Length: 297
Image (cartoon, rainbow, N blue to C red):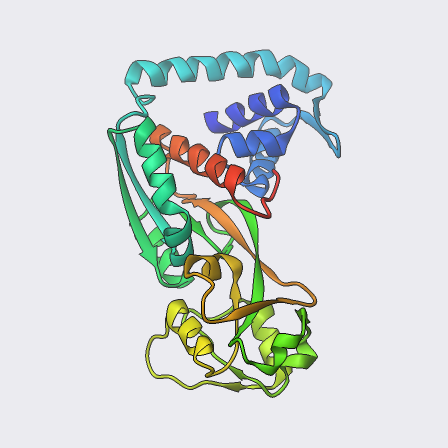
């Protein structure tokens, strides 16, 4: 018996919404839906009616709910007795992409430490998404704030991070308020070594422009410097651009708009320790209160 499924079931009934229950327990909506379906399959009964307005108990669910609630309450009591709920102590290993490390993490870490001074925080800055996946597979990190969904971790979408075209202040495209793919044709592109999302890559291929050649690694910051120096144009996310300031280049909106999604991820192979659950809730609330284009759960 997986008690986590019963905890999710009880929380869904209490909130009347499976998405809210999933967010509170740090599950993705997809993972939560699978857990409830798995629980119903194991019991051989339907527990919840699901609709646009939320969830409600079936007749069978009404009979199961009191027992499920009693079970989860006893589980909670056992955890307290065992000392697992001492969230004020513990260790959290966090993986973040560079733009998150620069823009958000200093404030998140400092404010979290004020509330939980005895929790040890270790931050790992990944220069690309593949490294983050490798860290999860090798158990180097417990959780991550990243910008690529791989479907293997418990992922909670946080914000939509729009892409902008950037150019030097004297570039001919500066006269346009929005940049269409047609306007990019024939341009020289400065692309960081981390690469671009599929949508951005598609725009660059359609434009049939030239890539500024470089050997080895080219960081986001170096790409911005190249653009500022007139070496070409680039397409970068807002969070990246905000991390390195606004001097030396101008930015323009893409038309149609393109964005990446920033996720909070927890390894699907790890038992969710209360300290990690606490940091997950704290970080997601911090970002939700301060970031732009927040995705409502």
